[in-house]
Image (cartoon, rainbow, N blue to C red; front, side, top):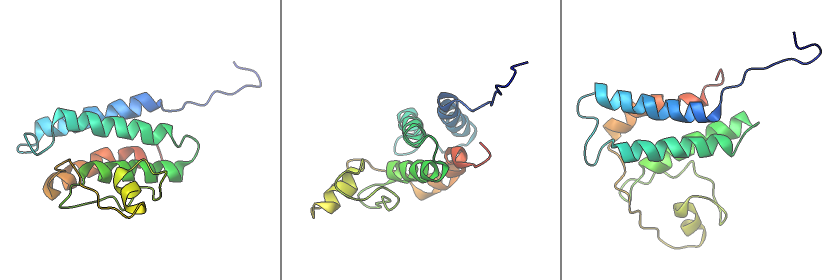
Amino acid sequence: MYGEDTVTKLKCIGHIQKRAGSRLRKLKKETKGLGGKGKLTDNFIDKLQNYCGIAIRSNVGNLENMQKAVIAAFFHSCSSNQKPMNGQCPKGSESWCKYMRTLHNGKNFIEQSKGLPDAIIKKIRPVYLEPCDQEL
């Protein structure tokens, strides 16, 4: 039908980003105790959803770096001053992570976010990290 040209169906980044947010909202609705202040809120889901899209768009064509970026964005979002989880974030003065930039400059970083409790992180991690699936 297309002659010499072939058509390859690719997943739209926007759809993957939206799917991550939709699945987190559905999980929050179905799981008692997951939502509320200091837990999984709609604003926090929006933040995770946006970070997922940014991580994918920043690494189009490089699956390994895309996976690392999505994982780093998740843990970066969930970290707090009491429990920093920025180990996956890029290091150096050019990093998008304020924590890593501050460490690179030899200063102490004060995180404003309260992060998420471990129990909630364990429940939402599989849903959020689905874009890291190599099949996708």
